[in-house]
Image 1: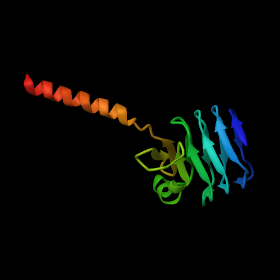
Image 2 (image 1 turned 180 degrees about the vertical axis):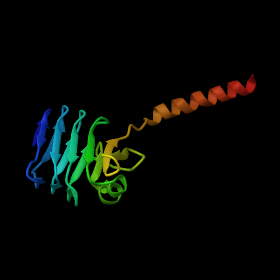
Image 3 (image 1 turned 135 degrees about the horizontal axis):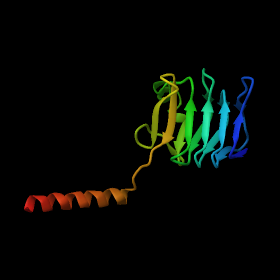
Image 4 (image 1 turned 90 degrees about the vertical axis):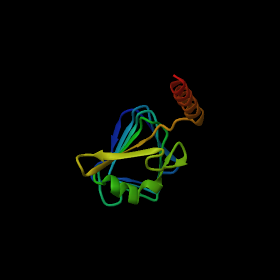
Length: 144
């Protein structure tokens, strides 16, 4: 199932169950649902997946964040609830999600909700360049 742009809302308490293949959200697509079970979702290009139900919104499913601009919102799960119940169900560009390493979880919807986004992780080569520049400035400063 592919959603490219636009908003799709599952109504009347409906959710998504057992979709064969990957649910691909891209190009600013938004999917609003109470829950998802036995499915795989991939988000890219500023897409949004929003869970407006409570009580286990993600069951036996995997959600892959493939963009730093993609967002997953849980209306009724706090960040702590998300970390305990759902972190293991998330990947970031295919790698397991790790809070503070490649994924950020913040408060949403007052104190009731959680907002999940991928974190930009600097490449090792750019970290090495910054370290070398910092060391060079430190050495230069000590000589002066």
